[in-house]
Amino acid sequence: MSGDPTSQETGENTGYAEIAAYYRQKIQDGTLTPGDAMPSLRQVCEHFGVAQTTANRAYRTLKAEGLTLPKSGVGTVVAEPTSNNVTTQVHEQGTDENFAALRDELKAMREEQQKANAQIIKLLSGLVDKDPSTD
Image (cartoon, rainbow, N blue to C red; front, side, top):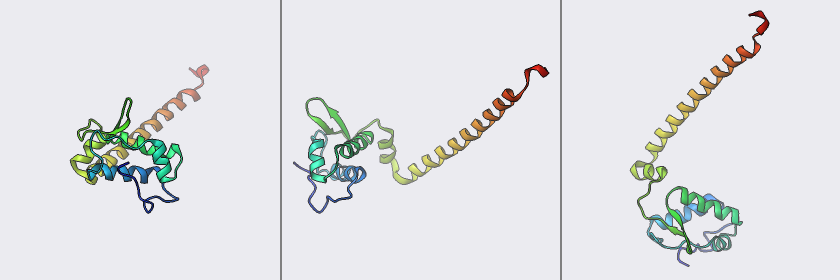
């Protein structure tokens, strides 16, 4: 199987992120090319010494990044370089600066949402506390 890890690349503390990074690198350096079948989950489990849930999570990560896709009768294959996946597009366009800007924007949106939620709770609690017999 092409792209097999060597015994030095596997280890007792291998997690899904390391497995995903390993195959991501193989895709990026051209060792695995579009249309190539990825190793089966069983093979990944054996080579990295991990549980199937760990291997599956690594593959879900690669799929979410737009690097792989399921193919009927084959399993998981390397995707074509073009992708509609937002994460992949942002990554291709420019890296950490884009991610940092998006992260900051998301943080600001979350803070605004928390403030709005607090205001709603305050308004609703005022309605609940109001005694209808005093009207």
